[in-house]
Image (tube, rainbow, N blue to C red; front, top):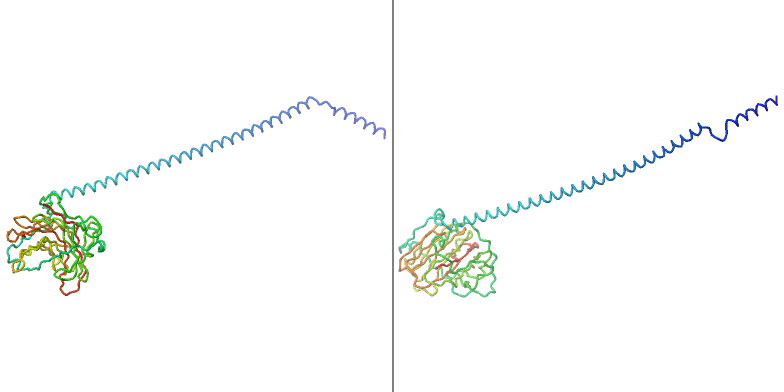
Length: 387
């Protein structure tokens, strides 16, 4: 039995050695080759796949960069276009503003030219002339003591000016007798286009007692600013006046632009032609004076020192708180007064003519009536003298 088993085992071992030889069979070689090829293909496919993935990534990156650059360029172009549009709009706005300013200036020039071309028509609707009363009896109806200015020299420069005056208003009639009547060019005067005290080369500022000895006339009451000369009267009766050093002459034409505030009736604004030397007839031409009747302006021609008939006069209703132009024309044939280019007074009596040369004065006189006194002002825009 044992021998039989051994024989079987040997037989099985021989068979096993025969089936598992060292040289592979053709099928095995083919299988190995196919497997190798498959593995190589798989490897190449993997490499190709990896290469494709990398290329795709690169393409994606390039595409993303290009898109970013394009967006940036588009944004820059939009910004540049917006800036250009804003600049264009600014230029158009500037052009429109310049055109508007030019139109306003042209309109102003046109209005000024129109006013100069037809001033008489413009003023006719503003004020109606009042016939003067040349007869002596008229003077007796409203006697008036002459406002005599002091003849002292102006105080030295140490006198400080009063507070600055407000700027000149354009309210009121702008018509001038000089324009209406063709008086020609200004010979002399004062435009008050400076700041401080009145020009000492043109004016003697009073430093004395007031009118008829009432109160004081002080250089400190005057100031020049904003193109206007202002004289102020305080609550104690200290006020001012001054006389011109220019145009001391016989005959001529004077015109002054003047206004007041809502003044106290005790303060009288007055524009005067005053004799250069003492007059035997007390000659005086008050070509604009507002008395205690604050809504009226009067023209007085004084031709005698005393008596019931020593003056002729005319009266006109005027709002003195507005700018108005007051003028006097003195010729060998008579004396004529104007307000805003309209005749309001005339006297052609040769016996009433002043005998000597005269000059301009500006005064705010105090006429006390015993009541309390409210500070008041008179302002003068300019004084002009013509031949």
